[in-house]
Image (cartoon, rainbow, N blue to C red; front, side, top):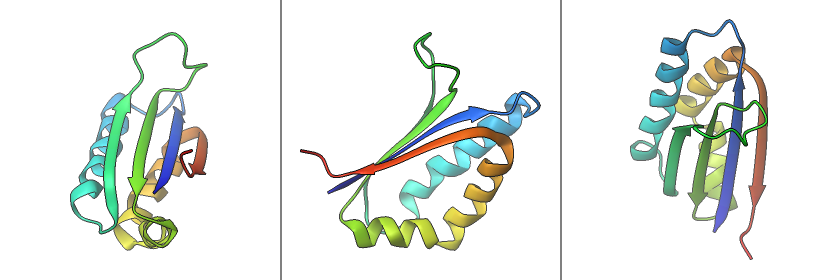
Length: 97
């Protein structure tokens, strides 16, 4: 299994409606792309976030599934919107111990 984590800090100028729309598009990917074992998208609610606003956590069957997800046109479309609307992204991929 492969874990994929993305943490998002939105640009101040990105309206809340656009933020939510991007997160909803990301959440919709879970049912459209193969190789996804688990997929969660949500907004931060705590004071511990160091200024980050949202996150995506996902589990993939293997590295090939993660690579296919990353290059898939549906993912590329929403990822482009995300990069445009975000001030900062942290992306981490790991194999659980």
